[in-house]
Length: 384
Image (cartoon, rainbow, N blue to C red; front, side, top):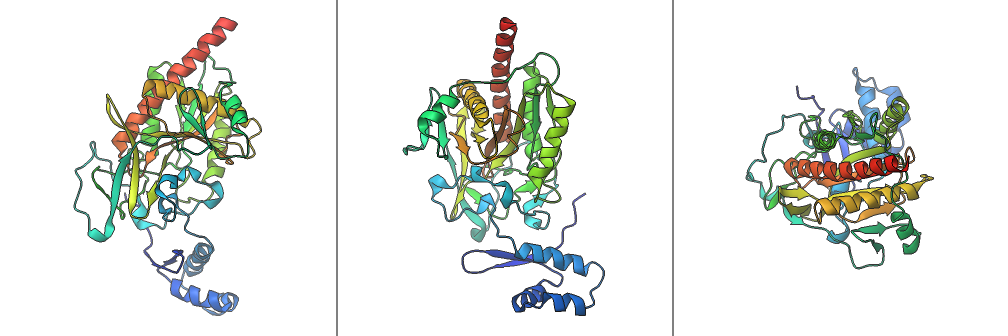
């Protein structure tokens, strides 16, 4: 059943800050907040049942900027990569009627529909490679995009150190989960993106849970025991998603100490002005969404070990499907990667890709990771 969502309306102020008001009593809230008389207003006005709660929610929204990764309109196209998402900039999504859906997924991408001119954005299918600046650290296969103060030599040394965790042969070895489970994809592919299209869905057959399941099934086929958690940590509230997903990971690690790899599977959003970019490559199996691995070093004591795993996984992916990876993003981020030395965030395509392209990439990721972990198992057995 579709969740009933309160109606809202919005307008833009200079600087493109969007302020969204809940339909009941929102306009009054703005005027009173500007006058500094909210306390008098709440104390003197008798509200119907639920009115105070609605106004409190609206007050919270007034204090937040709309910083969604899908609205990076001021960035140049080459730099509009929202792998830069930050925990502290999460926003509620339950109020966004056009941004979330629970409609069932179609089995195949539909043909491109008619899109109103005012809702059209150019859709570009592009394969990302490293830029020419010195922040890109070349490896034998692939690149590290170094957005830290560490030197290229330090980053390369850590990247080439390889995996620093033990892969066992019994019990779950991999945990797949999603901090932003409801992120979803386009239902079709073509030359244009519909800017009114939903970007989130509570239907796990069409959001990130579907991509995670494609990855999990492939790992099982490779003989790797895996747990796939499909908890929607970003619904009904987007704020606090990383806090909730952290608890989930901690509970699994306590329950299954054999887990050595934790993958948080997301999708990106790349947009500049009226252009949306879908990162893709062509494979023998069809068009696949490009992957971007993110390894953070903010409050992650053993970040170099995670980076070594990220680089090893990138090599395995490039051997499986050349061009499948965008440069590994190494930056001051956390994403709960302090919980294990095998914790990574993986962006599977962007909001301009289709679910079919993303699930194909999930299977490619599963094959590459499966082979990598089996190699580690063999090394451990040979050394024991």
